[in-house]
Length: 369
Ligand code: X8Z
Ligand code: ZN
Image 1 (spheres, rainbow, N blue to C red):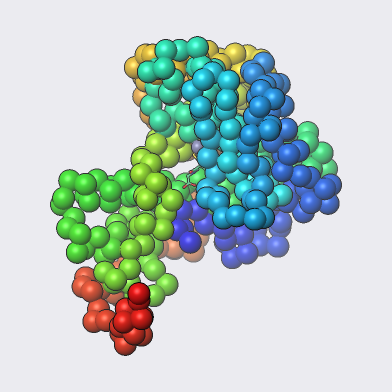
Image 2 (cartoon, rainbow, N blue to C red):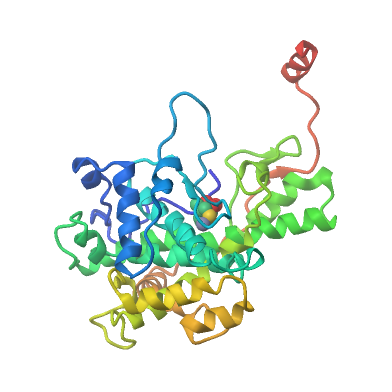
């Protein structure tokens, strides 16, 4: 709905007809349950020499959508700040996507547990993007063919070049496509809060950014009668979104550093590319991660990331490195087909005024008690 990531497997695969990796059907065939998926995530952290969640977590978390009442289903993790009570709220479906999201949410809980002995004021990541990046970095391992094979969901972790490129494309449509979206959400919010985007223009101001930064148009012309930004959970929930922009860059830096510690990635060795690494069961990687998480926000963030990354800045080069085979494939294809890269203005997408009230909305208003 928000086009924050694009699931276009059916029309945008480099090698059409070659299935990208998706273990959803296999999970369902093996009768996976939400509880089982959470247990796998808990086991992942334990394999890294990190901490298991307490018994109360299993009693108090919401792992399925309840039948009898409406709940907010956006995945979230909760630190009750007593050093013992940590929970997740997640309406799980048995899919590969949810298996990944559960590992992401469990990473938040792992972070809560690691910094629980810090004074209350330091029980946070050194910046919110780091909290998110840990979960996304773990997810990069979870989605690797090697890990899915380890779980018994793939027959082999060795893949053909076509499967590899298709899978990288699927991931790029998830991860790279997300960056402009993550950037514009808080850009819009910033304009609203500083007053440079007046209330009467909130919706078209939103679509201007969507168009300029993301190349995205709505399926029908919008107006100031609509309020599309508010459909995104984080806007009414008042949760800053720039953390997700930061984390989608930093996750690759973290993944690279942890994979090197795990001996799974050696720069320049074509037999061990970054996108195939799985840090599962590496105590070296886990210990480094634990050390960083235990600092909470007690030190400035450049210092905190330096403990694992050996560098103090956000840096997009690990992201490029991860997607390198796809980038090379795309560069060649685009040249071959003389492809235009970008998007051109093509018509109206938002009317900067409130349309006159239609008869039906008038009738509705008159009927209101
Ligand atoms: O909100 C989330 C997580 C919880 S921290 C599920 N994410 C953003 C979103 O869904 O909009 C993860 C990636 C982006
Ligand atoms: Zn998160």
